[in-house]
Length: 241
Ligand code: GLP
Image (cartoon, rainbow, N blue to C red; front, side, top):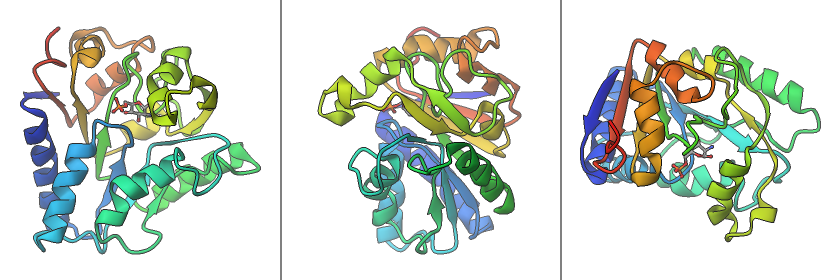
């Protein structure tokens, strides 16, 4: 596990550099995309390079980590809408090249299995971008998640619903109770993982991630077993290391 401490803006450029190197070698590479505030600098940096003609994602594909249950297509808080606004619409992916688990499907178990199949059929994720929750979750793998889990339905913790209420206009009652999420085992299959965390609120989770024992209590700690992980943090998020 590499730990890089830098300013938030530089962290975005570091990951964008890695994406550019990957796409240069494999234009049809598969990117793993995270929602949330942590990856926004990365998406800004990549979008800038695409606008400048330095990089094209025209042959690349993307898979999202997770999705709320019960938000219909087009809902402003649905992660597929959010990733579209934050990233996909700003770059040059081919139509349909970015997929996410369907949290509005009639058969959610089936939707999870189909999603696992689609990642496998694409050849797996080459570079996975990750954030981390204040309770140590990655994607929506909340504390207690099986370290070998695959894409499935999960119940969100009160902490995560509180943390994410800001995206729902501060109204916690509007935050769904359930989600579909790639499992920890699914995420561990990615060939390279870059996790970004900034701010004081992430310091405890980052300390467990990097220095704690591997435990389902802090799900991100499973990344200690991955052969190629970069943890990119600012001073505040690194303050308890
Ligand atoms: C959310 C998402 C995660 C994200 C994390 C941190 O609940 N499901 O994928 O990494 O929480 O979010 P943020 O980057 O906004 O702090």
